[in-house]
Length: 262
Figure 1 (cartoon, rainbow, N blue to C red):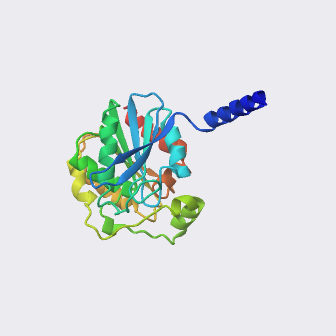
Figure 2: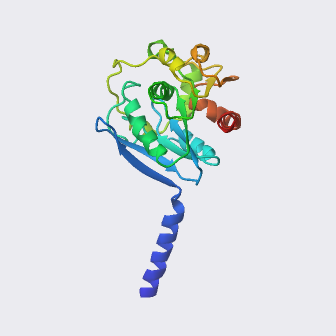
Figure 3: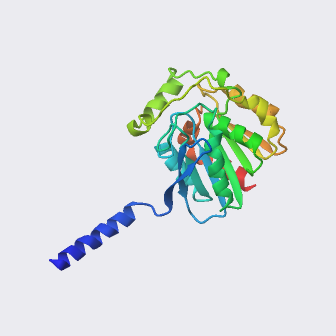
């Protein structure tokens, strides 16, 4: 009987340790306004880190971001954040008004461990990233994917096939039911007014057929940017934010890695 128990325990331990990736750990920080922010750290032993900042309705555990994080983790350590009101973080989402408070303690942690910090923002995650980088000068490079010039000018044509079909394909019940909304009318920064304050290298990425934040937003931000090292890429027939990665993962990763490594 003892031998059976020992064998059963050994098998249980084996499957428990191999089914979970020991390189991925969920961590937590508390913001200045007492919101519990959860993030996943992909610790692959690199000296630099990429921080992925999702947009509205996405989470760190969504298939799009876990797949993307694994691709980035071949070259850097990776942090994927759950902004307030999303996934496992507490609070309510304020559509870019207060989420800078979520990003700051995560980046502070990253600075205690890594040589260089690279920030990649998607959609409203780009708005938050611009907000952060215009106020704090401690990020080395910035990638903005489907970034708006102004929250109030977002087209947000959710019923168009280019928006509805990709959204339906990405549907995840657990993710959607985790979202908690705050006041959408809270005052927000306008990226078009803040982008010129950011002097670090910036890569702008847009989808040619993005129905949510059309290409002109990204073009205007590129023109207004005063970064001496900036670049712009439009994916032909590409859609919105993380869909650009899902539609053309190799192209997306090649652009990002080349920009970050140069």
